[in-house]
Length: 326
Ligand SMILES: Nc1ncnc2c1ncn2[C@@H]1O[C@H](COP(=O)(O)OP(=O)(O)OP(=O)(O)O)[C@@H](O)[C@H]1O
Image (tube, rainbow, N blue to C red; front, side, top):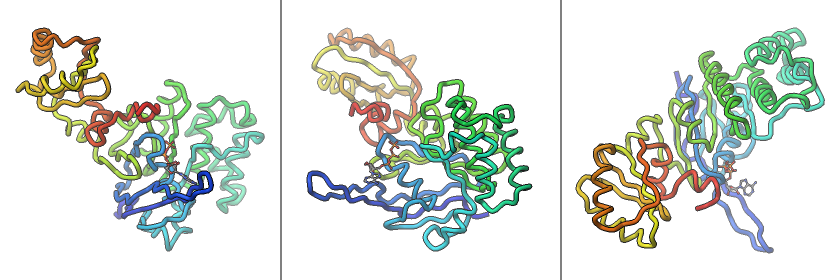
């Protein structure tokens, strides 16, 4: 079976005008990756990394500048119609008509895909059932909660029984309970055989949901693999020390000389120490800080997260970039 998605050197630039001058934004700078059939593939990255642009190219909504992709074996550039027949896409804005009912939205979508009335109705009932929307089916979408609307939008993306479903930040704006519920729905779609490619800037979402993921930054893939393999790249535990004086650079230099610390990284006032056995190392770190007179505000210990992977690859924290701090 061919890979569900095979992307080779995909590129996209935009011309932007600022104060009368035109410059170029290289949104996607040569992305190469493959997604296996039946996988949930997470596409993680901070705002502006190029995730949506990649997704819009893969779904034929935006012409590619360079490179190509094959989706379910169909050539994105030469066979866009075939590609469209085999995919579903749920964008950030959603596509439901707020003034129509859930049922009407689904039936209309089915008809637009060329289904006859009977098939469109049957498929609608199936999807209402899968997404637990049957009770709301005849209410206008405007009255749905955020989570219910999102479920309907994903149902709309599934109307044509796509082999590959593209979801752009499917859980943004949802509360934790609705996010967990949507993750369940996404897993159910995977069990039904759909390949899912989703963008997210939630670390926990990428970690919990994806079989494999790629981390994107400034239009490039900076890391790719299973969440576990990526986290295992960062061997051992992470000790985070929040320093309270201005000599953080000095503190880093002194701490990195310790034999039981195999890597250090400084982010503002936060010093990250990577050690094989965090629990055993911690008392020795305390002792050292005390003898050296290095003052700290807090010390925490954790196992590596995808944030540490991003930090290792880019020198910045994903969480900070996302919040616009870096
Ligand atoms: N139509 C456009 N014209 C000009 N620049 C654009 C256009 N679309 C995207 N960009 C720029 O391309 C870069 C990548 O944007 P993109 O929306 O793909 O990022 P993203 O990773 O999806 O971010 P987010 O998480 O905020 O959705 C950004 O610098 C953005 O400003």
